[in-house]
Image (cartoon, rainbow, N blue to C red; front, side, top):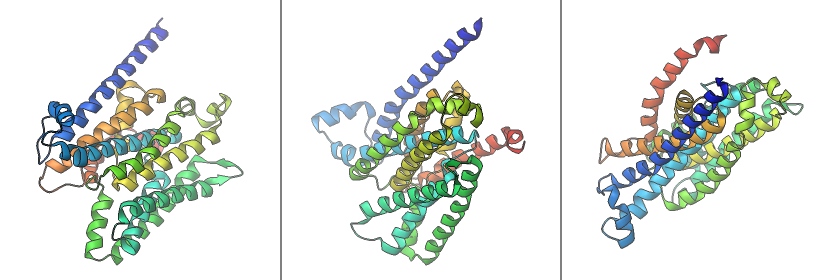
Length: 341
């Protein structure tokens, strides 16, 4: 009967979830743009923009760059997590596994402590973070490669090793930093969008578009990969090509996200799993749904972080950790049999 009927219903449900998320994203962005020290009613935003009324400068130069950047970063982190969970076939996989997050953090700390200061920080810090993140990821890939093949377990272990090395470098730079550098370093490593400007958005957006395009194209292959690596190979999927493009896309997106906003964790863990709970594990649904859901989550987290203790600002990384930590423990308890078997 009814396998086909159930398949149709399931697809209809997934489409409804995606449409709901797509409709919620602009709503959340408008609310985030309106709420703050200078209150603007969200439904008045079009009128203010059109007639250049009071609040125009706040919206265009302060709120919009921050909201757009938080949405872009959230989309990149979430889709990267969904992709890695598909590659490793493990719901606990996270973008930090392949070293790109720690590598980007190391690049940023090196810049802040050894080079930083002055106007160059606007461009230099993101470039240093992005470049070091990609470099660490390439190193992980080279270590894991053997005779043209990359073993998933070796990739994971290499990522753990280089994560430790990058963490040691971050600790050393933190030890050497003076008080001013230490304040910058601490806030940046905890993550946030306080430094969001249109130039940062314009640098991050092209990388995000390329990375999202690369990862979305892997959806069908990731569905085959969920059956197992050898099964995917017999179904005609080039598993090595899939790994290569997936790691490349994750390196681009996470490197750009960390370079723009600092270390924001758990987005790539929480959002994809929620999407799977709601609509199943089809990556043609999970990947785009994660991108939109991640954008909504980080826009909302940033709004909370800058209003909960106003006029002070809570780092966004703390907010996502407060959400993601308990969620991760719940995932661990739920899937511990699969992890240890």
